[in-house]
Amino acid sequence: MTVTLIIGTQWGDEGKGKIVDYYAEKSDYVVRFQGGNNAGHTIKVGSKVYKLHLIPSGVIRGKTGVIGNGVVVDPEVLLQEMEKLENNGIKPRILISDRANVIMPYHKLLDGAEEKYLGKKSIGTTKKGIGPCYSDKIARRGIRINDLLDKNVLEEKLKVLVPLKQKILELYGFEEKLDTREILEKYTGYGQKLKPFVTDTSLELQKAIAEKRNILLEGAQGSMLDIDFGTYPYVTSSNTVAGGACTGSGISPKQIDEIIGVVKAYTTRVGSGPMVTELKDETGKHLQEKGGEFGTTTNRPRRCGWLDLVVLRYTCRISGIDKLAITKLDVLDGLKTIKVCTHYLYGNKKFENFPSNVSILGKCKPVYKEFKGWDCIDKNSKKISDLPREAWEYLRFIEKSLNTPIKIVSVGAEREETIEV
Ligand code: IMP
Image (cartoon, rainbow, N blue to C red; front, side):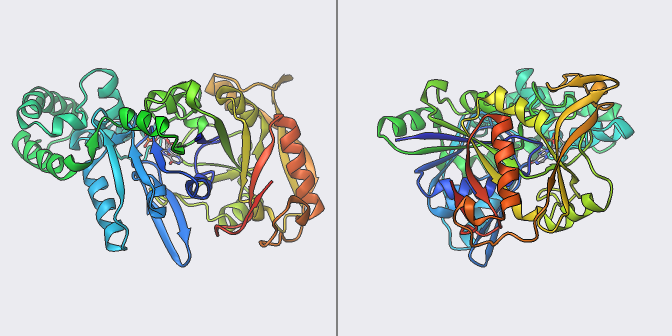
């Protein structure tokens, strides 16, 4: 029995979907523990491409997908995803936490209204209602999955909440009227449809651990988007670092056997906020085009740049990463020179540790170590030694700098295009 945790070490979109899919084969349960449908995982199985936002991707392999208490659930999206999978011949086995918070229509409206209000200072959110839903959870005004199963309870809560949200929306210049009854009917309807899947997932997971099942905890977004440790305020609203896996699932820190950090071979970021190694030149374009760096959820082009070891040292430390999974190494094919940021300069001051202040971060300049590039990686490579010598040296340097061993290297989108070290 093992409990494995997979998290992103950068700003999300590290290619976690493929690594999760790889591990899911040996797992019985695949668990989401934070975030919501702001996430997007693309999984390629043969000629079929699946894009999932909320349902753990392991369900495609017939595993039980668990939506933990730390997730914020848009029931409409969840039901649509379930239906899409069924139309593709996959009857997903899903367990939904009765404690998970629900994204309500006013959360989505508020996400859009707040971003509009912030104008140039906006976060660049996915506008899925994530931030407003987590805000209500922390303010103890949230609607939980449990509430969708009891019309009276939901009605009592909505009677207080809807007029309040209406007032706030009006302050943002929103004119339409929210209809409490309509929301009540719609969401109790969702509740009835989801009821067969709703349970105390923390209890189910503890039973699974007692039965010596393999459990895979699947992180969404990346460590630099963590609400506490990320580039605040340009972050998402949940804990994306390893600690979030425990509070978001009910699995104890003592029960996690291995933490895998997924590292893309270069850096990308969607949305606003500083990114020290960003490239606004031809190389940045090369990474964007070759890497297909466009958001799965919003289709926005991702900002691209060199690998940043200041970020990675920080995120490996915060989460106690045991092993690294390097993804998209092949995207660097054909570049004459490859650079890695080893530290930052803030004026004359050397920063080896990631600063907490985004205005300082915004003024930091990267200091690079240069590597010779390579022509082309053979996607059938099965050992590190099958890779071009230059690629091998690049990986060695990352491993040494982070003092963390590499376990997996992904050299293509296909499942088989993976090297297990
Ligand atoms: P929110 O999570 O929609 O509130 O967005 C907050 C920030 O997190 C924005 O910069 C988003 O672009 C970013 N973000 C949210 N989810 C993802 C993801 O799955 N990948 C990459 N960035 C994300």
